[in-house]
Length: 397
Image 1 (cartoon, helix red, strand yellow):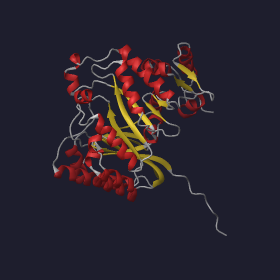
Image 2: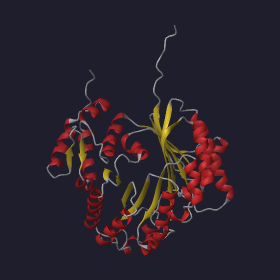
Image 3: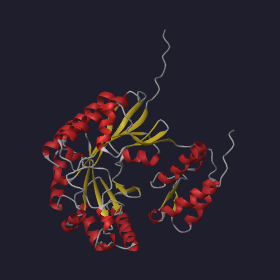
Image 4: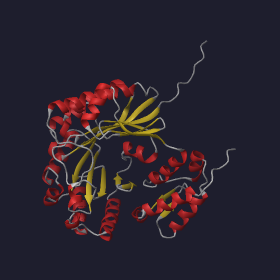
């Protein structure tokens, strides 16, 4: 009688596909993208990213893909046919879980019934819709290529096409915006009844058009931005949303599984120019140059800008920085087991922060930050990293 051996479980893996094409560039955006309409470049990207996926699939036989995320750029602008080809290539070269979360980002102006029905048929089951504001004048200032009426129409098309997991992106701290304006935006968007909302503070990034005129933008001051943030937390909590990360809120059970990989140390592979990966103990980023990416894949050249193995102590610091962004938080036993470092110096810092209502412990003893703690999270993380740097490794038993 043959001896039956249990097949080892495959490790979970996320895939990110960077689609670097946009109709127009927003005034605040520093993500890598191009507004090219050259068929040669677009076709070259599609061929390159599919070839890259084929190569990478051979390196991951012991992984099961449980999340796929198409970001950009504007994947919806790239179109259904290209996205469907990429998704088919993924399925042919990776072991994709039947219940995988498959997300694509969309701008309201490039949402069509054909796009939605094609992608729904291809297994896409989550949409991240970039609305940003309900004020048309504000949308113009931001360089957004849509109106709020288009955003609402796009949302209803998404629902009609059968998508049951829709996320909406919003921004606050915008030029000339006050707390009342932000509250009205939240109230209007909540009438749409999305499953997920991301609320991001406007950040002026170097090299963007906004960076060149930031002194005349009339941005809300830090105190007003803090009030806007806390208003979002309170409003969304009152409407049944759970805050599971600094900027992200969802209805029960509908966290962004893909993004949680970034915040909790999961493995992921990135494809397309500027995409990042954390896979098999190494982290690397691809070149922020579409033509260089295409040429590198086609000719077998170097497409990486940076590749590094992360030392264990650095991973420990990332554990603190990333998990304290989330409602998962950090745990003493987990930390000591993973990194062989003492948790006691960190607990001293967290106890001090507890007195200011910046940190608290869950029923299971995990440390998490409060909404007020999120506002000063950079200071808290700095204190924790200093405490970690001064600690000596635990002895192995």
